[in-house]
Image (cartoon, rainbow, N blue to C red; front, side):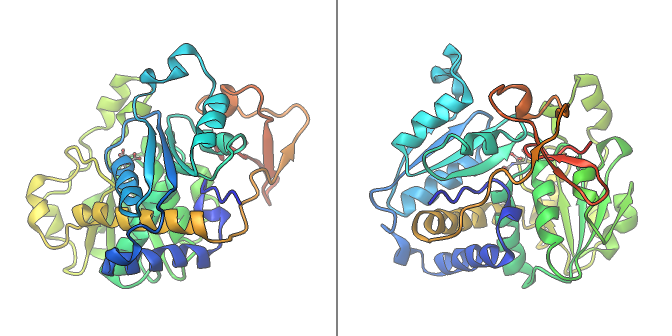
Length: 351
Ligand code: NCD
């Protein structure tokens, strides 16, 4: 069974709850799970830089007794010789029992899944999604707030290119009575494929004004590498900085999360405040990834349907950051929304 994890929303909430609950159990009794993946191999294909995601996956697999192969520097693989994503994935999936892939292009992991001979996990596809960061965030919320519902969540920074917050909002909006405050400049607002299906959200351009209302403040880095030019990045950097003066306006039960790496958007002085949980959050990520690997390798779950929509005569995805622009063998297939607009199956851009 190829239980790929491309987008959490391909699975039911009960499956997310199962992964998170297993992550908690592993955290409480890690020795019970030692060796439970002995003999299995995880292939890690990192086409983009990574510290936490890559190492927490590797550490998770090693703790479960499995082995790891892979690259984190594609220039040291046959990719420099011009090998396509399709061919690389076909080959590495033959050497692996499970694969983890990060790539700079939206929809690339779904495209990879279509030629993979083993399950593949999306560790970040361009500025699109990052589902295992969201599992990390959900385990953190469960441990630190005791719930995944009835939360007012402020998300601040780069909401346009930040893939972690796209996956986070898609998942948390499925729990009862959660509401969102999107704190950003006009240029870096959430894409419409995230906001269109949402019931309960509002925008703000001021962290000061809203911080006092929040249960959770999720800070993000401005994603320099995804901007069209350095000048445009410069205009956006350093616009939102959480320091002690601002945090003091937050409630005592507020928690501050960040997927990391952090640049200057959280002042170092905040690290010592008990509400700052981002380092703990990164640690939870390893346990939830252990749970995910165990479930994918051992449980019999209905695999996701990769292509749900269809090709529309003459309609092409025009998002220049979509995998459809670089892998010509893929069909431009779309899902029709209730308002008759179309959503690209790979990058979710709407037209
Ligand atoms: C994030 C990512 O790669 O999207 N990092 C991570 O996986 N924890 C966030 C970021 O790079 O800003």
